[in-house]
Image (cartoon, rainbow, N blue to C red):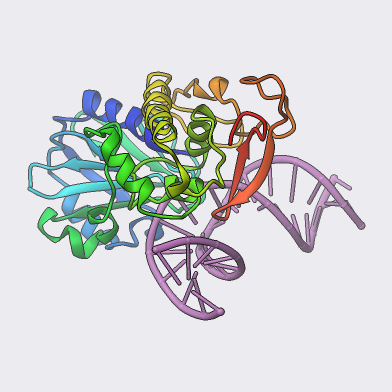
Length: 278
DNA sequence: AACTGTCCCTGCAAGC
DNA sequence: TGCTTGCAGGGACAGT
């Protein structure tokens, strides 16, 4: 599932291969993918404009346009953004196609249609994309000092897992990386946030930065049952580094003593080692 | 404030 | 073989 590292990998592809290009025409298939506005607004907002760059906040991709507007793309569960030759056959579940001058196409593909594509005026971001305004700090895109994490953690008695998943607190962490981060920090996912001592906060801070940085370097995680690939269709490698996610019942490779358990926390499947996480 | 459950949607796996 | 059922998950939202 695309989380911060996967979205960042796509962003880098867009920044290097799509920034500077001008959209010649736009096709929208399923209206659900542009539900935030409308088919007409997306087509009107993208046609004839140049994409000037590629930014990211949490799991949100933001592409500034030379019209002054921006494109927001969210991949949610199963979204893909692919840059392909316009001659390539259209894959199933392709919902938006932007054709560049020259014939290449940027395609948005999403079997589960949770993802979205929106063109919006940045001055009206609060009306169109209110959750974007409320997003917490992004640990990779911005400075994320230990003191910021300490404030977030100490301010609540919630369990660590749902806290890490709360995009309004910290932006970009999803179910896979939350489990991997908490394992690396040797903290149980159901541990109350405000029960952490100073050293535990330090471990959590380091683990957030370390896991996310390494996952970005690996091009994200591509799991057998998910379709995450980068802009050019390549999968990532970080799944081979996963120590708990999807390893229920296996021996813990960190301590060599525990067996990975799976529980539900914050309504999400959660994996951890009961021996080395406390 | 914190928690649970529901919804959206599709592909896949398990059970019959 | 082919059907039905359940599950996964990001995030908004309603209800307790």
